[in-house]
Image (cartoon, rainbow, N blue to C red; front, side, top):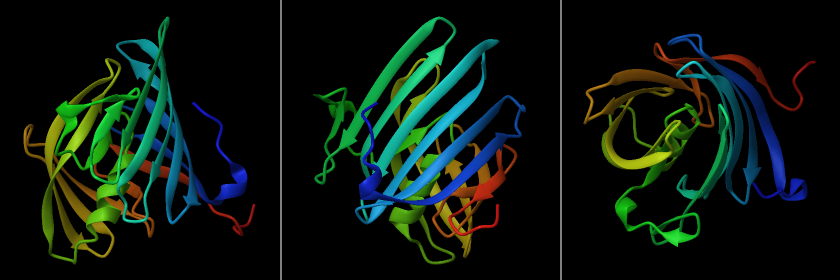
Amino acid sequence: MTASDPAAAQLLRRLVWRRVLDEGSLEFVEVEALAGGLRIGGTLVGLEQDRPLAVAYRLESRPDGSLRSLELEQRWGAETRRLALARDAAGAWSRDGSPAPELAGCSDPDLGCSPSTNALPVRRLALPVGGSAEIRAAWIRFPGLTIEPSVQRYERLAERRWRYRSLASGFVAEIEVDALGLPTDYQGVWRRVADWSPGAAG
């Protein structure tokens, strides 16, 4: 992944999520304000099919919450693989620098190994309490790094509580989020276990 420019970004938060579904993963995340949007960089360490798995990624969003770019590196067993996605202001996707027409109509990425990308539709949709919307996400699956469109529904239940539903699988979960739209509790799957922001004690 290309080096970030620390002068262009403002650190907002560092946090850790624990995967409570199977106690198989931890993820360290750094969140920065960047040109009116967010830069989210994460490092996940866990197990997949009894092999060590490490995923490092960085995504950047626009002020409206839409994706600008996503880069990741996955190390799984003996393999190291990389993936780069971008979505231009007109909504056209590219993968590793080449057009990706198979993702036409997708509005958001969905990292299958992390809860971080839930923040993008939460921020972009900005629904009123009681409102709901369907999106078409580019679902990135691990460790194969396959990408497939996924129709999903987001419903805002309260100021910081949302219901997520995958229309294909029927999976449903409630997600508690913070002021940035990042999950603090992803029902039965992820839970935030550490949180630090500039100015905090310690």
